Picture (cartoon, rainbow, N blue to C red):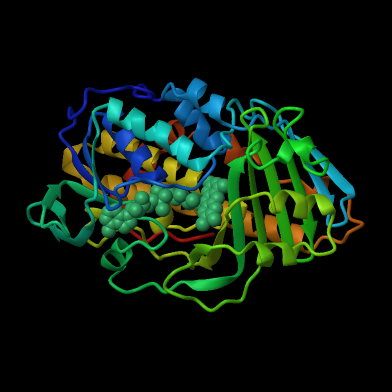
Length: 427
Ligand SMILES: Cc1cc2nc3c(=O)[nH]c(=O)nc-3n(C[C@H](O)[C@H](O)[C@H](O)COP(=O)(O)OP(=O)(O)OC[C@H]3O[C@@H](n4cnc5c(N)ncnc54)[C@H](O)[C@@H]3O)c2cc1C
């Protein structure tokens, strides 16, 4: 193991100044790990109140546990020991047992806003400056002086050694980094999603839904032709969440998240196991989320290599991968290590090396999400067996982004110096 592994340095001790745009999972994780590794960080977030999506697999949760957050996170998350999968008629077709811990870490499946709040408070406790209500309008770089910066709609100017844009799937920074507008396309799918209190909505009083809250936390799935639905309880059966992924050919619009209509949700499960309509209809409100696709970007970093994209800004994820937030966290942690090992004089080298370390892995995780969706959506009602399991591969869940960055950074950076910087290529 590299001698620096898990080393915490006094904030600001590397002299590297970083402006992070966006306080989602990617931005906050990057801010936290950069502060732990001795860089000086400021986070600019346009909204005044944060509402974030994304549950965390063992590959990301091992990082949060390393930060000392396990007890708080575990107390607000679902403790799922397996996934009970049904066909649309309600016949059980598979029980997939989950090991807990899995690959040495506990997954965190809970209310995303609550998990995010724990990260936010931890960042604040480390002294990370987070400025809410600061919307970044323009990006700029000065190669000669070796700096980059941003200007906000409030007229504030922030300069740093590096600007990290973690500004989400609709990233305004993407155009600056690429030099052109990358247009997304509809995926042909949308999700309805809801989260609510079990007792308030009478989940325990209805024999069709009470099984979600009488025996602790459970995770149930139903699959039909081109549709799947997952429903989970958490906090010992007190909270319920569901997500239903279905065909949606609405053309791309400026907005892709809307309040959902329950009548439309229930139409999808007409003729299904009555437990589905029973639990869906208990949600007081739901969100209708159109899923969009961006083809892999050719690069995530600007020509000067002092402005970069991470998280969904660089590589948007479909929810079926259940990895978007985890990969955003891995991005931030890997970057913090790369900058620590490169030092202030070599920020562009650190950034280019980081891109090469991350590029193929992120793509593999994205593709896995699409193949799970397709596998379930094409399953026949009489399909049974292990091939229906959610994939839980060791390359994905057993991964430690921090340890990996320490172990490969030197070789990848050396290759980059010897051969010159090349755009990353997917295999
Ligand atoms: C319906 C749905 C369900 C999902 N479910 C899961 C799941 O279960 N598990 C999972 O891992 N992933 C899930 N994902 C994906 C996951 O939400 C994302 O991959 C993850 O949130 C990405 O984090 P991020 O930090 O890159 O971006 P975001 O969380 O989107 O954060 C971007 C931040 O940047 C801010 N911002 C944007 N522009 C500016 C600006 N100009 N100036 C300042 N701030 C700005 C935004 O306000 C926002 O706070 C889901 C996604 C969707 C759409």
